[in-house]
Length: 406
Image 1 (tube, rainbow, N blue to C red):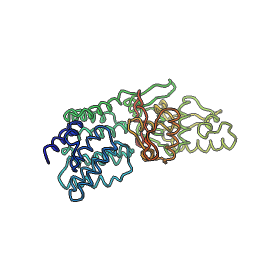
Image 2: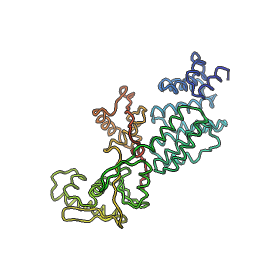
Image 3: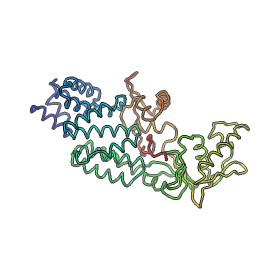
Image 4: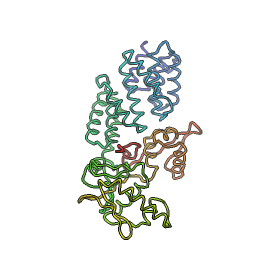
């Protein structure tokens, strides 16, 4: 490695992208191309960065598999920043194996952390947790340790384990301080802000009020019967009845919780659960069937009693009922939560993250664009979608797979 390449690499490691470019901007040899690609990524020009990294990988060829593997890892990180999930994770896994074989443990750990962050964005939390658990913490540099702890914190937050999340963020801050990378410190501070912003709304007989993440966790651990509209279910403490795959039953449970301690009439339940404003006897018969199914599912935590005008929710024991609602209502909440990270997303990436069809995502984006809540850049396959940050509250509980389903 010549002196200019070495100096450029040191500048990049310190986060000085411009300093790195000054040393290799006019060179087209493979190491210089790779360093220029990484520098352009740090400056935010991801398409140009990706092009340079691809050129570098081709120029290294199969005879320099270590250098080529490093380019693959760098390109995977750029793809993650671009929210491009089209590539196969196998290439990244193969590059990680090559790096391990050549005892380049630092870059191998970086490859695994990129895989973890990709899984987190896609809501595949169990896989992300398993990959994180397999990491050797002793092989992590301060910068990589900060990224790892940020991932641990996000996993904990999505499960509403507040104390472990705060501990992980404290470790991330310490590691980022040792690394002296301003971008990492800023990311840690942004993650810490989630604890101080409203995360959900509690609706009960006393009215409606905002809850922070710690208060949400305390409510779910309390003795109250919680109808949770964030993860779609009904529960008391450790007892949990998931209704995420039963939208009609959840709509009924939500309406009953909203009316507690009173009852709600049959016409309102039919309109809310089935969408019919002028119900007839067939709709009332269907309501009786669905109420029977709801009774069977929640019988361990509550009863659904018939009243002269409708139905009422009666929790078992002397406990209160609380409806936990997300900060944004509607099916577009998770979409806005993903877009609010400030990165440009393609419709295919959004569909993959949400577990929905691309056409469904396109329709939702069109509605949001008409309301001025998102905007598009580019055309056709190059089109990407962005939304302004959702200030005022945290989006943790809006993200796909934010909490376990049961």
